[in-house]
Length: 541
Image (cartoon, rainbow, N blue to C red; front, side, top):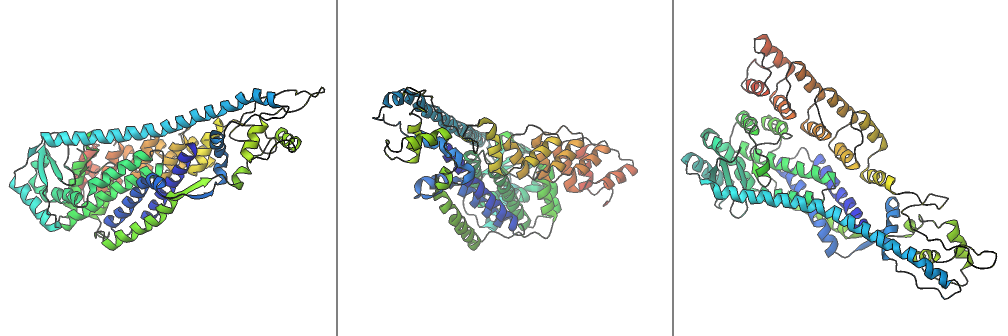
């Protein structure tokens, strides 16, 4: 089981890394096209364990970096050796309990690994089911919206997008922003504030109906399942977050295609972001952007250069074929201990002497059984010809080269994880010097995958904000610089990361604040500064 989890983790890392690399290479393409790539990668992740069970296996030699871990599985699969018929049989029988106790220990370790893997998966899936259950309750308590302005906007959007299925348009006072979900019977649920702003009906309906037309709700559930199954893979979380961002950007493109003015829509995004719901919206899409995506979406809406076309059938077919060509052979691959792996398990000097002395009396057996039988034989003969001792032999997960003595494996587990995840010791030390000591390998992998350098972490801590590692990763994803935060705090504007991101996304710069203060406006409230900048106060800095 331990080896199976390790190999599954390596395969998932490879699939997620390849998908993120393709997204990087296609960053000039439209959001809809890149969203196709991201969700094909998520589908490959979900299909990976299922395909591994269904496809015929392709055995390859075990790579050297994880060869020592194979010793645990070998002990689990090795039967207790039969008693020898030579004169040392009584001693072999006496020593056998010490050897047979080892599979019990490794079996308990395997069960612990299985439960450690499944428990977070079940918790994440349970949270998703709870969120979906809350959405069902919201629909049951909502009221049917009969406002002609909103119904006309829905009809126009459906006609423009060629969507002929019925879409329920409801209103609820339990929401902070509009949301949509569903496949066969999709729902667009508006909050009270949106209902009272009919001038925003075209933009909101176009955005939410784009999610419905593109089956984004199914893609959201796919991402939840992928992160639940591969919760230990930081790249899977990065890919799921990027897929969500691309779904929202593709919906934004649908709004702009409906001849909605970019500045007006950007102002809508900033306003709705202040009232976004978190807990109940885990299973639905909404207009409200998350903190980390606000700036990126606003900049993209105001930019005239990005490609905004839909994802064509040839694009979907081409990348689906490419993903299958990569995922199917990868799912079929299983590693077996080959010569390269067994060569790393060197016998001790005592085992070598046993093999030389008993080669003429002991039947020839495979290498695994030989090690087990050697543990049941006497190490040396005393002066009377009787066995001097029959010490029990334990199988360790690694041996020091040259001496054959066992070394503890606990201290090396974290180092092994860091090696597998590609984290250098230098990066770990630099992050500790930047103010984040005692980070686990998972924390370091998530920080590195999020683009957090030790210099960036140190500069963010120097701003004086009480930031955790998650805060620093989030700030890096937002594109916030420590210099910008320090400058704003120098003006007395002390806020959270989302407030700084909202200010920066609309162009609240140091020059803008100085111009405001030269006119007697000395506010330090982030919302007021954002509103003043969006309204064109103080001119263009």
